[in-house]
Length: 71
Image (cartoon, rainbow, N blue to C red):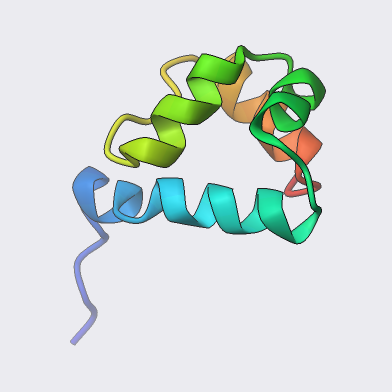
């Protein structure tokens, strides 16, 4: 029997921690990731602090993926 697809909450669980791990692996500050991703430092802070708040805009998601080489 196939498992049901994950819920949005399940997908977002740990998002902030995963983002912080990838950023720190590159030895980047939050400000540097923000600049590379084309978002504000506050956006990075919010995502890392409370992974339940996803990047609201597709542009933010794409910028983060591009900056971290996840595209």
